Image 1 (spheres, rainbow, N blue to C red):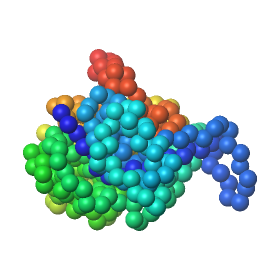
Image 2: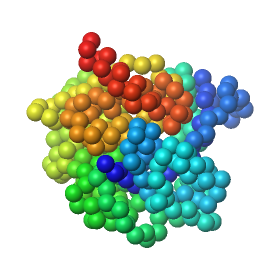
Image 3: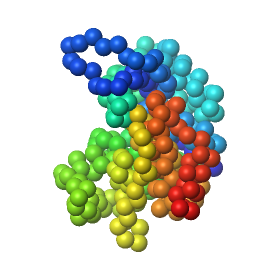
Image 4: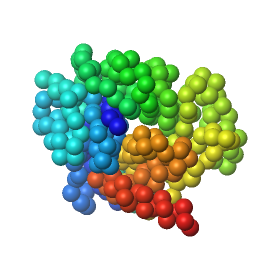
Length: 301
């Protein structure tokens, strides 16, 4: 089973704090900053390799310190970087993340050069699963064209034009509640499930693909022999950085291994929820055996 994750790669610098900083004040952080690779599809690739899947990542980084650190992380975990392009003279995308550990929230400031995108690159591998995050549209379309039988999944985190175009070319649209609300111009009221059903139905009018709406700590929602809300698990959150990416990585793993959709959603919820108990995106990816153990405990309880 060969998987390719296509999209954004970044280098994350996380500053853990026990409160959000006050404007125009000097603030000393309580603990050391945490650095690691990041980016939506990039984090998915990291998780999939960590969970034992044959995984490629396609995207672009700068020919600089951050770019080399990202490549080094991939090599250590086993991600194939054949389709990772190094761009001379363009800085690697970087994200500066302020984490409020007292409530588990994070604020992300991203610096991405508009020229940081892949050039034309031949695709000479066959893939069983393709995971997209809406970036690198041209390359993603080429991979899809050359792998018509592959299972295709998109992480629709935000409503960009490229995301919308690619969403019509996949089998699974796993979209954030932000994407769902912005696309339908409707708001989700968790005290009135009819609002979520209406949003799902509106999405389904325009997309024939299987749709899953992620709802952060609430879980996720789909239609599978009826409307299904799959709740997440309760945890003490300290940092939500990368939780959505980890959900999508786990989702891709489960689909690649023929899990049914409800089991897939439950496993993905657990992987995402456990991740918020640690600081730092990639440092919060739990081993597969621990996610499975938690799933088994909940199933038996």
